[in-house]
Length: 550
Ligand code: OOB
Image 1 (cartoon, rainbow, N blue to C red):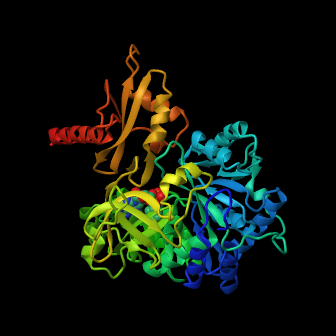
Image 2: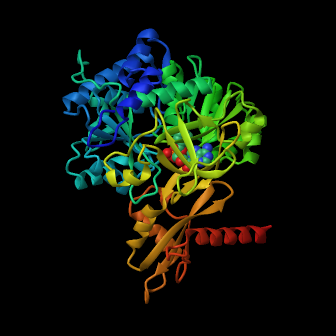
Image 3: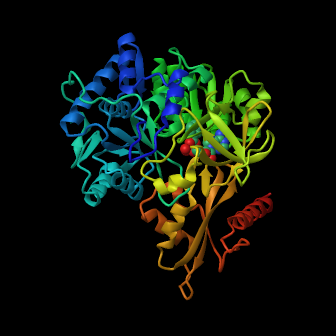
């Protein structure tokens, strides 16, 4: 990425090194799709079983992207413009993002779970030119959300709707005759999109990824996960998330010329019939779903024998659960420990079973620099647990328009402070031992404590709030909000706090699972709220309740 005022790019000497080593191939997403379409126009690229069912060939996807790109240009959307994309797992997702890639407009990848507060922020903060949604999905009407956001963000010029547009513009009405030459088409080193960070701050940060760096993570992943043109990748998690997008994900599969099958939901009742019907060979899940799948597989009438690889990541997969994967599903488990900021680690398909079930893998690239350090940034030897710092050919050098945050989130020499606490084994594999960032990992869905605390603090009866994780057998962690009420405030029920947060217009996974009222918070030696003590307290309560049930 060239140095811009929006985000720090890769320093020239690193960019040169990554190019010279062949990691950055000088490709763009737009050209990549064109190349595949020319090589094998009739091969199926996307299978979307929703509605009447659609099977788009590479040739068709390429033409659709071209026509939509021309239509976007005609609507005044061009290079560098941001477009918030919030679509479920439907074929249009790919048509839209490849159209945007082609003209150099930047998709901002929102999740279907996001609501008014998050979407308003993404649209306002990125000064988005457009917002792309589905009409109704999983019973939720995104057109109403768009109407509200539009009223609040005057700069948002267009809302495009896949399906019935209501008061907005039908996506289907946008495509026009392809333009012969895209003016100012993006270069490989330029930005391709903005991904969302799980985050630990008040508002989610945006992650600027370039064509060069992201495409490297795709083919690097393909090699490690054995994805080739005969693979069939099932996208069961929300398509916009970095894991199903690129590890190796839908984009990795398309890079390989393989087939992508879209599941509207990741549950076995939806996914298993698709695996059987489409001959799915590889997919990715978060740990709670992997547990559900291993249990459901024992009783399913569907033939899952085509499945060769199950990737599990996004949150720590317990060793015990990991051991069950191969016997239950008859496929190889591949643990993946990645982050939208860049670095992705995989166990290798030929790693010994012990390594596969007890580690979270090792980096994609020989050029990934990984440091495990103590609190003073001193490097620690293998076997010791410390903070994970990383720098490399597909890890960002800074968030988008966040200079202050970047000053602490990165070291002076460009290492990203992941906030993860890890140990490196003698074999170079990483084991995730914990987390230093103020975040709750709710089964792979990330909740920034500060963001939720700010919402709770807006409640008139609340004096102070501290959000921490509590252990959960299914999700690994859930959120617990400790609340101190104002002096003299009438008692508030925990359900009222949850309702209050929900009504602030947030993704449902951010609503606290539990609310505990206290009169004061435990403090650390220097007088800060001791979240460590709060976590210990709620963990003890959860354990005591579980013991009482037995
Ligand atoms: C993936 O990406 P994000 O950006 O939603 O979250 C990244 C964070 C990591 O820093 C770590 O805290 C946690 O999620 N995480 C894991 C993990 N995989 C991710 N913690 C323990 N064990 C794992 N296997 O979550 C993501 C991106 C690409 C591929 C896979 C996951």
